Image (tube, rainbow, N blue to C red; front, side, top):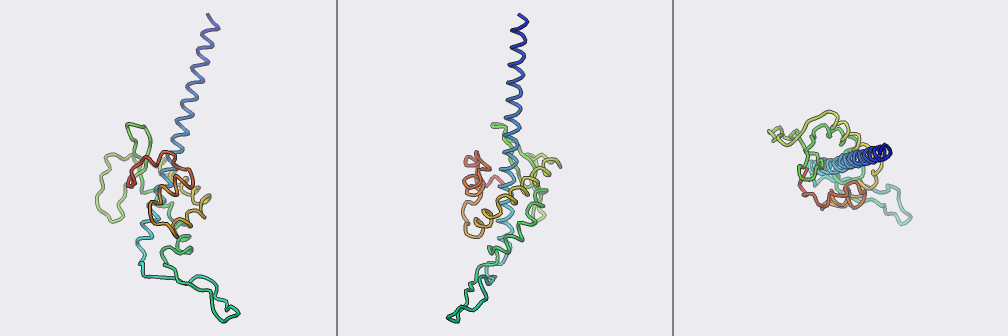
Length: 185
């Protein structure tokens, strides 16, 4: 009888540990996915604020043997230099996000809680917590550090559905995001 109780107790502890570990892993994935999706949202907004008519010359200023130069004009907003500059400060804006929990799936998502224009926002579904914003900022910085080339590649060339392409298909940060609404952030 004592052995059976000990075995039952051990089984319960193992199951409890497994469930808490899987929940912690899911929360970690939620924050990485949320940071990626917020990063894309912030980058897209920052790019949209730059005059699309502004261009920058890129390429080599050296003279080729035939007397020509390999210079081309590209839109400033999507130039590598501008994208690198935007990426330096994008994670600071994670402080403008709060956490929302989907009651049906218990998954976390992250929504903007500070308006860019100063207008009032509905914060009824958001939880504001400095630990969450710190975690979101750290996750954003990690994504920028590990996926800088992919981020530049996508924003220099892609304009359609960047959240899903970058966060789900390219980096696997959001395994469940293909089921999310595209305007969730």
